[in-house]
Image (cartoon, rainbow, N blue to C red; front, side):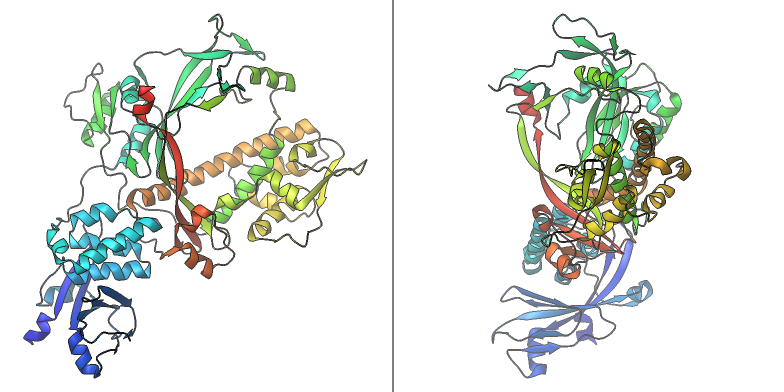
Length: 626
């Protein structure tokens, strides 16, 4: 009985909230005993009882690891080889408490279980097991590992811990306590709700800000490389130290939160410093500039705090109660510091089921792309002469400032950014969709109904003219029809009137506030050009709003959680696979070079992909030195 106890340990697996997630007992069997039982010095075959989930063989002499959820077969043992087998059995809490065997959270067997789960693609669970060892060093290094290179390093360090007893002894056990602080994501929601009562010290923000994109200069370069500045510039109307707090936005496919600050400006002639009063029949007194500041970038905090003034005691009380303001007394004249150094996300947050979401988003984006292609140079508000005058004054038809820009010299550095995409088992992500005009050229002929002329570079803008129509193109023997074709073509066929299959109406029916009867004539080419432009513009606005709501409520919070924690949310189970494994399982998928190095999770009918992307940015010290 004593020997049986000596050959068993037990341990608890915790999640990152510090809650007990699972209980395990481990049997230890020496390789020497197995050799004796099998009457062989060079091979073993060890079965696994049905109530055990896994076994791991460690060759201590060769530092080799074999993991399996079934029969363990080793055929190449050396005569003097030493090793051990660990067998893992999940038990309930009551049984765990009754077992009179040692609790070993920081045991070699627990690290071996981390390795086993990494091999199986159970990335979440592998990280929970690692957390349960209490090894602060390894947890800090690998808790957010998400891509291939990071996981290889994760496995390498775990293997070192398995065979290096000093590495194991060096770790310190972490007391599993829930972090009581509010999360940054929850704070952002509070700031958004109260932003009309908060003004930010913009000078302090800029002085301590690190750019996460390339800093641009206004203007262009001539043939000699010299900077040619625009003939106009802007001046802030509210050119004080403080500005109104901006709006917060989560990125669609990276773990980033940006704060968009809006300020009123006036257009000024550079030559004589006189203001522009009127443009294209409009008063130029309500123009705005937009500056985006990255609060969180790739799951890392980029701004540690905000210096603010608060005009509402209610807002002050909320922020104080949440522990992000240290001051005790409200004073509207006082400058407060809001602490942003918080856990980025609530680990117990609830996230939407994403099954079927990719197809819905893809269809909306396809239809929106078709409409945008029609409206590229068109407006339902301004005539062409007005559009030309707006462009001359660096304004878009929506009255956004649009100065020519170029990258600043000698201020550029580069970093690796992590992109997180949602896809399906047929189409890896939305980036695989063709642009509307590209697909029009790929699958259709646009021609003049009177002359029969076929246009070599067709575009949807052409279809707004009289006597212009589209028909299906004969397929080339070399053209390979993909799942992207199968998704896009029915929508294009219906929109172009080639096959009335109801796809456009079904897409519009999903969008709230869209009256199908009102917008059904966006596909009717017999209507006048301006009527179609008006209908297309209205439909595009509704589609964009609907898509934005889907991202804001369902996609962006999930992307942010995955990028910040390196985990899938609890309840969203999915095995981690590399591109080769995923392609073998779903051969319709196509991968770019970046995606080939990525990591993918199969979650229900959806695929979540994570991969590296090289990005350039302006380093603060270089910008300041210039």
